[in-house]
Length: 211
Image (cartoon, rainbow, N blue to C red; front, side, top):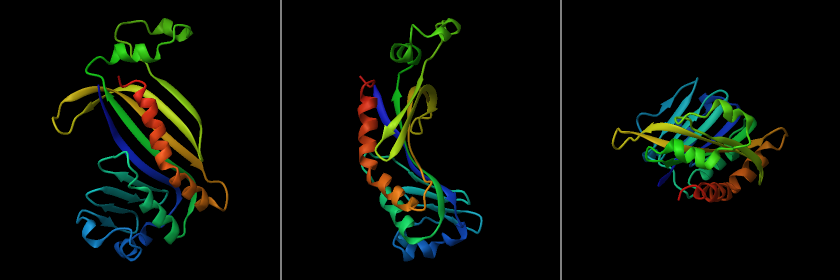
């Protein structure tokens, strides 16, 4: 089965002034090179959107979101967030790293999801016994500096290259850090330093099912 890392992003929840995140700020602090910033980027008092060939960075009043356009296993995004954390003042209440893996199930989603997640001892199964039933699960645990949350469920996506719909089993990992202290920047940097460990943990889990 085909396995793909399809979403990789970092989110900071807090209070921000988008007007301070203008083009000059990103160039002055060597976060992006001038040639990297595409013409479709937007800088305004209400929000800033920096588009490059590799990343999309959005700054709103209540959050910063950095998406990797073509997610890779390697860490390419923590350096950008690190520079932002070090070079501008803001307030933050939460920090998250999201890694979403898709297993392309070749139209066999119902059988696979039942094989993976059906629990014969669950009383709710009496309501889900038809052949078209799909199964999923949710789990969480402490991992490093974060709380790891995993939501697994079947879905249908459209492949950009072909325009064809395909069934998948989506493994949505979120590594969340609460930022309830004055030293929230230290906590952000700690979680950023663990991003490779987070990625490796997700790969190990997904490999259990991608056979």
